[in-house]
Image (cartoon, rainbow, N blue to C red):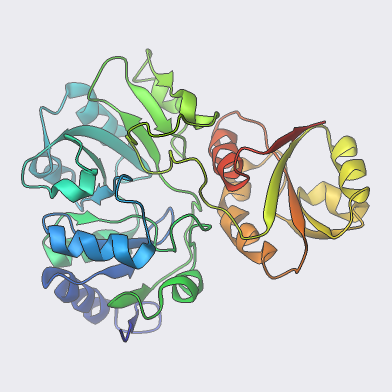
Length: 340
């Protein structure tokens, strides 16, 4: 398959958006930029188009997709029995990196929800994403635009490296500003559950959802063969090919530990870099989890270019946005955690 490259940065924005919309309307699949990560979009109403997304990514069929809309008014076209609290959350956090899991409208393809009677939906803050959705005239199902299980793509170059020749088109836009996937909260049962942390934090959600529960799978290994209610809940995800370990502990202990290892690399905080003898990748300051999130997947992709046997990533705190970073890292490491 020849993958069309649609440049909306230096090219004609309106023409590029219209071209992407045209491909999506005829059942094609298109990688598009969002504020979180690049998504691989297809019509959420078209089972055949959704099958192409799963095939291009090599994605397990039991892993549901998120439906993206361009306007809050479109929520009722994809979900049924919408609770009042969902509307309050939408008014507060949309457009933005919050996904709500609600009852699925029958018009949404069953394959989008992996056979469940629920649907995950969000309205991205990325203008490029919303313009493309509006141009297509469709709700768009869009998982991350990468090979399933590998680090998510936050630049057009990441998408091209993974999916060139597998998809109809790649919209080359700006780098993603958030850097990790959206927060996912389940609202179809009581109490509401945080299924995947993201830039809309548990603390922020609790202001409107005082009974919010953090699902055990956020920080612990999920049970095998359990239904997957949200993207990002599978056992291993976001992983480089290099064997990856998540390391918890104070900075001095982490530095000493990494320096005692051979043929390894460190993904570390900026104030540790000068003390580490091994090959290192700095992913930000310890006290700025938003920068850690933005740099995370680029750092994990870079790991596989270093030619080392293993990589040790220094874990952030689990507060606020740090929980989202930790959640991605524990899956990238296959739940291999070293506590110092």
